Structures are given as C-alpha cells and as structure tokens.
Length: 552
Image (cartoon, rainbow, N blue to C red; front, side, top):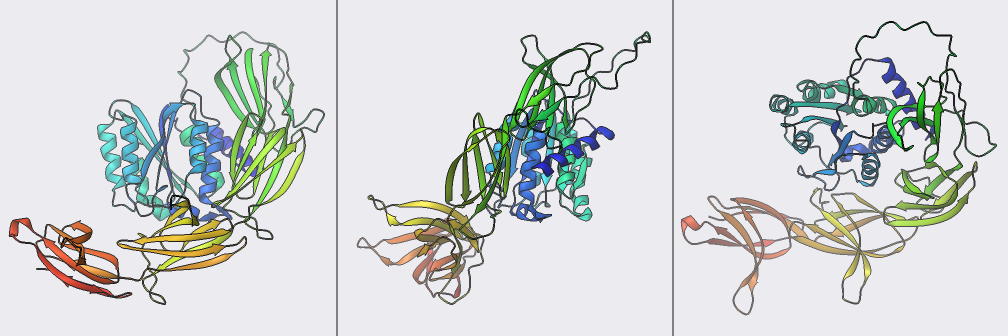
C-alpha cells in the first residue's frame, strides 16, 4: 500500500507540473472488466491495479462532482450485451464506485463502443455537458466502430468529451482507439504501468474545475517579510510514537463552513506537507490508508502552525493461503472490518486501520474464513490465514476418452452432493467455458454441466490442498441441421407418448441450426407455414460424432 500511495503522490506531482485540461463535473467512468484484465504488469494483475488506482484517485475528487461508474464484461463470458451502469452519476460516489470495482468479476468481451454510447445517453449528452472516461486494456471485440461513434457524439452532443486510457496497450493498438477521444476533443492517454494509470486518472477524473479569472487588482502595498511556509503539520500512528516519514500518509484540507463542517476542498497532498494557507478557518484531515485524524485549524496572518495529528491506528499484514503449506494466493479477497468502517484488498494484503477489534475475512473461491484480532495503536500485526480449500479444473468431453468440448457456451454449476429434504441441492459456484476453475471447501460435490441440449452430472470430492482435473462426459454428439426455406427448425424425441405426441427438445428460427445433443434417436421437423405441410426427418446421434442432415 505504501508503494501505491507513493505512486499516487508522483502522479499528483506530475499533474501540478504540467498543463492539463480540466475534468467535467458530470462524468461516467467505464471500466473494462474483460477476461484479459487478469494479465499481469510487474507481477500484479491489471484488474487489481485498476481497483487500487480508482480507490486512491477518487479520494481526491471534489465532493460536488457527479461521478458515475459503468462496466462491461463483468457478468457473462462471450456476451456483447454485458454492459451495466452500476453507480449512476451522483455527488459523493467515490466509496460506492470503489466497492463496485472491488466486488466485480473480470471474464467477458470488450463492447467498448456500445458502452461509451450508453454512458453518453445516461449523461443526457444532447442536453447537458458530459464526459466519459474509458479505461480499457483491449480493443473493440463486438463489431463497434469507436472512431465513427466519436464523431456522432461530438456532432449531436451539447458539449460531449470522451477521454480514453489505454491500459497496457501497445502504441499500434492505442492508435486504433485514440480516434474516439480525438474526435470528441478529448485525450488519449497511454498507461503502461500502475504509476502511469494513476497519473491518467488524476488527469481525467480528479482535476479541479477551472476557477473564474479574477479581475485585475491594483498593485498591493508592500507587505512585511513572511515565513516561507505557515502550515507544516506532522502525523504519528500512536500517541508518543515516531513521526510517519515514509510518504505513505496523505493530507486533505477543506475550507470550514460557519458550522464547522467541511466546505470546499483546498488541496490533497501526499507525504510531508509544507504549504501556505490564507487566513481563515479550515478542516484538516491527516490519514494513512483507513486510519485518519481530523482537526479544525484557524489560520491567522503572520503566524506559523505545526499541528500534530495522531491517527490512533495500526497496520495489518494478511497473507492468504488456499491450504496449509501452499503459496500466498493472489486470488484471495481480504475484507477488513474495523471500528467505524471496512475496506477490501486482494491477494497479499496490507491495511492501516483504526485501532481496536479487527474482523478479517479471507475468501478464496467458495471458501471463506474469518478471524477476529485486537490491534493496538502503533502496533503491526502479521498473520497467515489458511482458508482450507482445494482446486478443481472442469472440462466437458463429448464421449469418454474423446474430444474436449472447446466451446465457450459450456456451463458448469457446482452443487453440494447431499440433497436437501425437498430433493434440491445447494448451489455453490458457476462458471462458463473450458478449463473452468473452482476453489472449493472440502466436501462432496456434483458438477452440473450443460452444452446446448446436452446435460450431464459428474460427482467428485475435494480435500483441502487438492488440485483436480474433473472430466465430465456428456455422452453427446453434434447435430448440424439445414432446412432450406424454413421459418424454423424443431427437434423432437423419436418416441411418442401414450397420446401419440413427441416431446419437443428445442426450436430455432431460421433455416439452419447446430446443437450438441445427447446420443439417441430424434426427429427433426422443418416448419414453413407458407409452403404447406411441415417436413420431418429421423436422425440417430452417436457420442463423439457429428451428424449433418438436410430437411427439404
């Protein structure tokens, strides 16, 4: 976390030294939640870098800015429609956005053009000034044209701007989406690592709104010499403890309202602070991660102030393990619940929090363990937490020993093997596609597997520390159906019931259809109402084989 805050400090310093544009007051941040965000930069998953960067930078957003949060690819694999406005634009949304980013999955495609369009519409871009900030580590994968969309939004919007942050993209890849920003008068920023991403977010999201230019004033009368700085606070973790000097801390300074509450934000700085404040009343917050202390300060002309802030906090290092003796898990979610709040981290976790009773919950897949500990002010506690789960990788096969079903439409649901009193089973986890990975507590399970019309169950057991490859045999083949001129195609079981009716197994509109289907005998019916009577054809499906038929 110290490295993260130092990176944020560097990004803020870079902002203060360079002439940037100003962020709009009505913004939607779009986060790419596609599966490629699991790729690593400097040993850390890009999704983790994005989460931490958002959390840090959003703390510096002016309180009255209306910020929203949208994501795509976070709920369904292989879907171009998986776009969701999770946090509508509103003031004070920083914590809600951070919580949403922390809880989402990263597994889908990249419909970035459609997402930007939806965000613009949510901001009513044809009526009001609006800004969209897109963070993506990949190019459009759903057929959209980002360059054309940029021109369309600029022409039809009141004052619309799209800023694009290419996270980990090559220079050639960046050129393919930079046009979206350029065609709206926005910025394209290449971010190749954690420091660059935070700098890009500071530039596009956290920059202050421009202040009106004051009218020229008469030259002031000569003033007596002033000290170089009039405000130099210091901060300690515990009363009587050493001053924090590793630049892990931050300062937030606000104008004080008449009732003593926080008013307009004056500045946010990281590390040691030496500055000059105009005479007046202020609210100053000193913090290190989640531990913070607030004081009301009255600045008078000619005086120098060196207040001491005591955070009354400590630091927790949590090393999560899937099983006893295993490596530290980078897939773990670590939730810290402390007096007055909570925070979430991922993988090997460090959190500086208020002193007192700490409730730490570590989750790896479907396994969860919670520990409660006491943390004294100024104390550092380091703890290994073992969740006690095993690892299973699931794949489906058309027939035992045959070809693996390499199809993103495969669905795996893990349920408890033991049935409830009503005959149902408790659902544990879901996943889609080949090589689906699950972390599971020790127990007996059943893998419910579906691929088109084929359904199979595979029981298996997991022990803590296991690494299993679970193979599910579908006992199915592939049926490719063609029916020239058909309105729809329908598949029936071949056997009729006592009333002479056959059970319909599936229907598709159009004149061609391909389905994975259990081995057996079927009847394929061609529906063409405008051509008179339906036509049908029997077919036999064999496990692991492909059958092609034409019904005319």
